[in-house]
Structure formats: C-alpha cells, structure tokens
Image 1: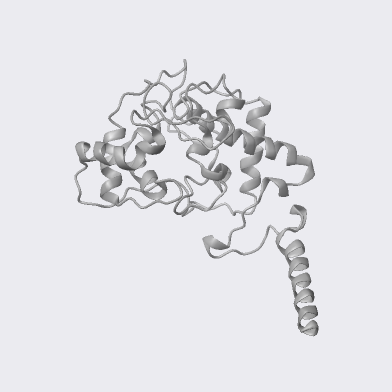
Image 2: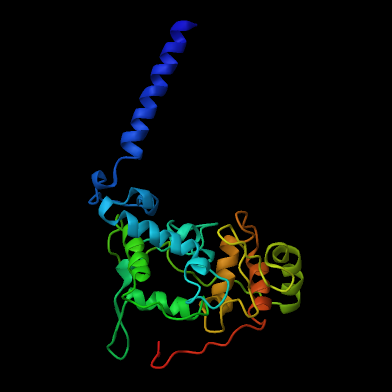
Length: 275
C-alpha cells in the first residue's frame, strides 16, 4: 500500500510540473508560428499571460470590456457593457454560450469604405459606443482606446490573418417559420423576464454579473445591430437562457420579433458621422 501511494504522489507531481511548464508557460515562450488546421486548435491567451511590457494595457482593456458602464460613464448612454454581447471579453472561439467572439478581429481592419476612406478598428469600436451602448465616441488617442485595442491585439496574437473566421459574427438561421409577435411576448415572459425584467429593464449590479436592458431608455438604440431581428435571433438562439441555451430557432425568432418592436432610444449620429 505504501509503495503504491509513493507512485501516486510521484505521478501527481509530474502532472503538476507538466501543467505549469506546458500549459501555463510564460507568454513570451508560446510559439506563434504553429500551423493550426482546425478552429479548435487556435490558442486563447489570458490577459495575465501578456508580456510584461503590455500586460497593464491588456488587463485594463479586459476590465473595460466588462465594466464599461462603471469605467466609462461619460461615453455610455445606457446600462450596457461590451461583455453583454462579447462574453468573456470576446476571448473565445464562438459556439453556444460564448456571445460574439472578438478573437482575430484586429485582422479585419482597417477596411476601405465605398467612398475610399479607411475604416479603422477604433472607429468600428466607436460605432458600438454610439449604437450598441447608445453613447458617445471614445477619443481614438485616449488611454482607454489604446488599452482596448491592445487587449484585442493580444487575444488575436495567435490567430493568422484570414479572409474570414468561422467563429466570428452571426448568421441568418434558416427556417420557414414566420415570426409571431404575440407568441414572442408570451415566451419573453416565461423565458427572459426572470433575468431581463417584465418591461425589459434588465438588472444592473455594478461590478457584478448583470442582465442588460433590452428596451427602454437604457437599452441599445434603434441603429444597433441587435435591433435587427435576424441578428438578435441568432444571438439569443446561441446564448439564451444565459449559460443554458435551449431555445428553438422558431422560439428565438418569435422573441426577437417581440423585443425588436419595443421602444428604444433613437440614434442621433454626431456631425460628420456617415457609416
């Protein structure tokens, strides 16, 4: 018995050493040129793993993703933070209960608009501040914008530049079902109201997990992507109820039809904003 116990202790020690050096190895020793073939093989990098020279910015950007309302109140018009759509700060490879991934997003910008102008990642984030957060543009030369961009660069650092990423963005779900507003209202009361409130007002708990408002003065405005039924349908089908998504496509369509028809702030673009 004693002999077997010694073997078990030694085995456990070897496993712990392997984990420390192979799994939690310092960020600057992680190979960046591995030939990944499957989406599941792409690495995800924790903010704490960032090299020392950028770690502070990366961690600050990660914090801003989760605590946007508290940390940037002058730029957020409602009660929605970035992580309400981008679960875990977007640091995931999509799928169920992951929200919208941001891994690889830095490789999609800058883009060129039809008029020839360059559309940068910072400008894309400001579009979210204006629409999804119903707020104001964050100065592109601010420390906060620098931190957000640095964070997104870090979580994308193991991802090659590709034309598209299978985990990014949403898709239009195929169905012959015609969305039913009245059934959506009933489903919302049963499946969504316990977290988001009977009047879509949400539950805001500073520096804790919260449930964002879905309509009303504190919600995303009418120009936000989430106000488009097919985008909202895809999001709630993949992610709701939170951490236990089990809606059918038809249920998601009906709920989206109901929610997107509710009153919300009207987008008021700043002077010169045309994208």
